[in-house]
Image (cartoon, rainbow, N blue to C red; front, side, top):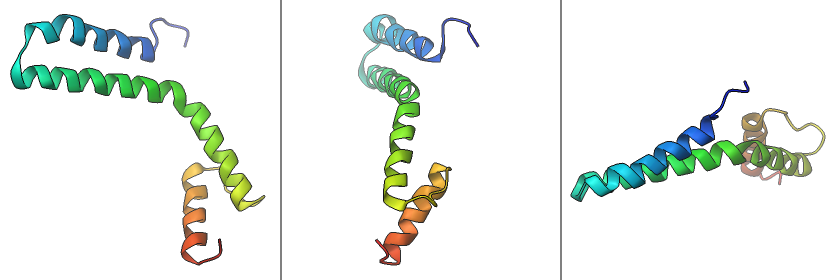
Length: 90
């Protein structure tokens, strides 16, 4: 898809709206929840931007640890690593 805004831009816009418009109009527990929501959006935005590169780095590290027979699925590769550690094979 080439539509704009993309998901990270939307998350940034909503977080900015919460901080600049909603937060000044609230107080107490609601203001705290607005801050939490804006921070959660920032975390989700960073994760969506950084996740592909992080997954590639994790996969490369697992291949280096486990060798040529490393599963391509990260969950399976991590499970294999855990199994080898539990079996005292690493």
